[in-house]
Length: 319
Image (cartoon, rainbow, N blue to C red; front, side):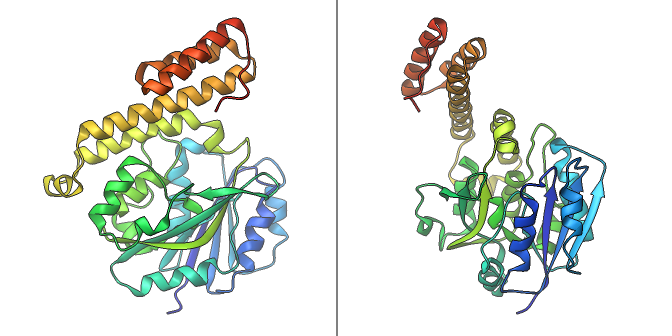
């Protein structure tokens, strides 16, 4: 099996990272790939750096800036330009280990597999290792499970790192391409949920992507919006067939409670961040929001945060 893999690479002002991103595709031990880079109107040196790479497999397109709330349009533009039977995702600030494609191709020998994924290595801005994603998770729990069991796990959290994903193009097209609700700044979670209805997800133990964390990325700049986008799960679940809902053994009340707890945890995290940055009023607002829907432990932490915010005391030892 030697299929062409189309690598979708959206990028915006990634001049610090795009070289490493492209180099990691060129260094792949599996060579039958094309990289489709969609530059969302970068105003730094991203385009100049990409132009320095002389490889016909790299296809570069620059568009006027659409922003992250139109990310589905950017992803689907790349999808439309793709020629491969398999689609892989590598955003402009991330990079891959050299054997990523070679390892993952094998999953698609099985016709029932529509998506494969694995562990991601989370790195800092300099590419230094920090942790794994999913964090503190035994990957064995994802192996040899059927579609309903995978769907059930996905309904409660997005544990699949986008930089590790490879999926069948025809299956992706069958759901309308990459999916993003209007209120969400990301396309990955809604897309995984819809793909999970089409076939099996194959899990690898190996590191299949390196996810770089930095202050300007969406997951840091738009953290609250990303968590609020989890409410898509409630809409998605309501639209499932009665048979599928029954097979997951999940109730809408469980999902709603899970969403409220995630939202409360995010408000508490932001409250602590504001507290330690001296943003006292913002800190109080976030801690109050965390208190409303938080667990007992979170309510206690929120009360402590409110007390400190009122006295303008930082809490650097609390997490």
